[in-house]
Length: 210
Image (cartoon, rainbow, N blue to C red; front, side, top):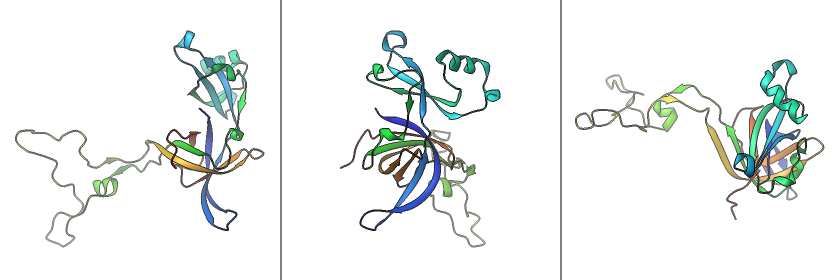
């Protein structure tokens, strides 16, 4: 499966050949480096471990630095794994960039959504509020949480107030609008989860829409 790691730059818009405006998210990827090859004979599965993002040497812990020194690769900020079918197609130290994708392809993008802190059930789940008149005494409070006798407790999974955002989110079937290998940039149609400068994973679409 084709996949790379990238950094979210932000959103903008471009025009296609018909003059239509297309909202796009700009993702930057200076390329990731293969740090380790994992084989089915030794590790039980075929995968490559890749490094992404520059980091200062002083900020790398010794065990991690030794791992990179063993592969003779410059230390990277992030380490991730990708399952592959044929491990022989990759070599330690090989660089993988945005040029593995082409305009018109469909991709899935995974990132960590923006954290919104502790929120009430109205904002978090779209629950309706109560009357805003003076005698209501029920404006934005949480309603009934379940049965009293019998169950005697709040059932797990009940939609209520709590921590919102900061979750792993995957957006499926985004179209690749443009790939600029010289600038290490890829433009995707639509929005991508996460804040600016956030780490995202771009992979070939699993369930391609027609």
